Image (cartoon, rainbow, N blue to C red; front, top):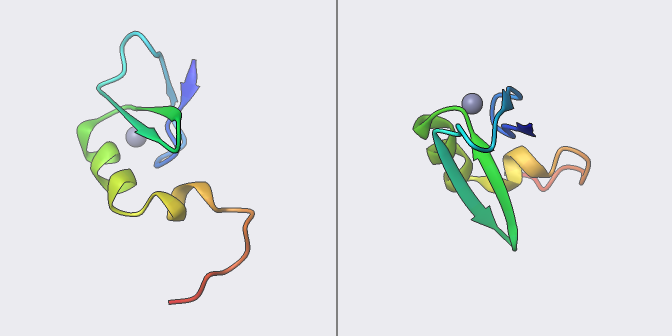
Length: 55
Ligand SMILES: [Zn+2]
């Protein structure tokens, strides 16, 4: 199982509704909408431990 970085849901790689590749890593999503959100702003979902970048 993979983890949907947007909503935090466990997603079966074989049944993922959508996938996206970011910086060489493949991410799986439970829905196309989650992928859209991820592609809009990947840092928001991946940079939870990178500190604040500011707006
Ligand atoms: Zn999701």
